[in-house]
Length: 429
Figure 1: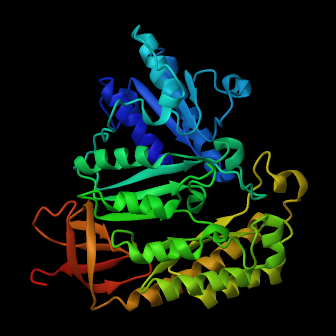
Figure 2 (figure 1 turned 180 degrees about the horizontal axis):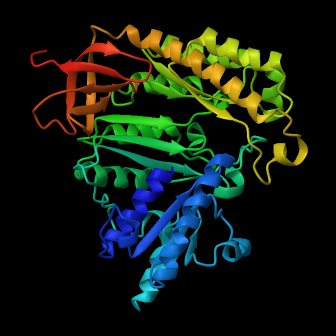
Figure 3 (figure 1 turned 60 degrees about the vertical axis):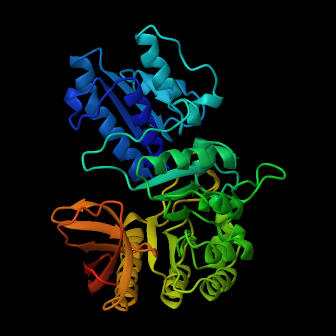
């Protein structure tokens, strides 16, 4: 989501005549987009922001903009007091405060309404920001903002606000614009993306959005994340299987393999519910790859409860596991009502145990691809090799002298590790 927000701000700035620079000391405007899902992310943002202060002191005309979840959806006077050298504070997904500030400096008319802030600020089309290595092939498209589910550990509802779905026609226009500029793949984003449309009575759902986007000429692939087990229903699973442009890759977090922990997380399902869901996905979508999320060290997590997460991951043998160590976030239920009683050392031990297990699982899964020919969407040049992904989101590198950016290339896999593969293009399929 932050990548999509940053691209939108960059596009808006370029429309005002600004050009990107890779050096902060050369910039007239610096926007720092922040995440606070975990304490480590907030600490990193604070450190980076503090490092910019000397630049502002040496050049008072430099505009510094702090954006994202560190700011939240409400103006916070404490932020102004903590970072007095910051000129503009922008809520998540909202470029308007920065654009207004710059227009004011130039004596120009500012944006009129909040409705324009996210998706009408750049007139009729979204222009992709300049990149050092050619055009953008894959783009992130926010389709539902915020979240109203409120897992007990999650700060997103407090920082990004309640759930808000975008109209289908608005998303279609944006994707058409991006495709006209060379984008070949879009990833539809939402904190709970499979709840798309549920906040509007009678609104179409995610499968209807798939159908609308599927008709866009030039769009080759559609992805979506992140799903919630409670709303990953059979209709949606069948839609993934039935639309050729929708990739066979599902991101659906479990968070814990223990039912008591899941209940205290307010997830709304059991480990057996999750097992049945994974089985339905695999039965309906041939060759599907599945990614999950797991949090270790949730308050009160015993060794046996952690072991259930370990055992579940080993049993289901999913393609990817995004792992996190629990950290209490302000305003959340777990921070207010539960004691963070697992030591940092123990959290790291559990994290490493799952990390090592997942590496073995992924290595075993990916080994089956050796000798296969896979369709790869080429995203960029990485050193001397082209880099791209299969429909199931496997990272593939291969060499070719041809300009293949944005092309769908058949690649025969010659080597596979847990995190990537290497192959050779097939000239005559």
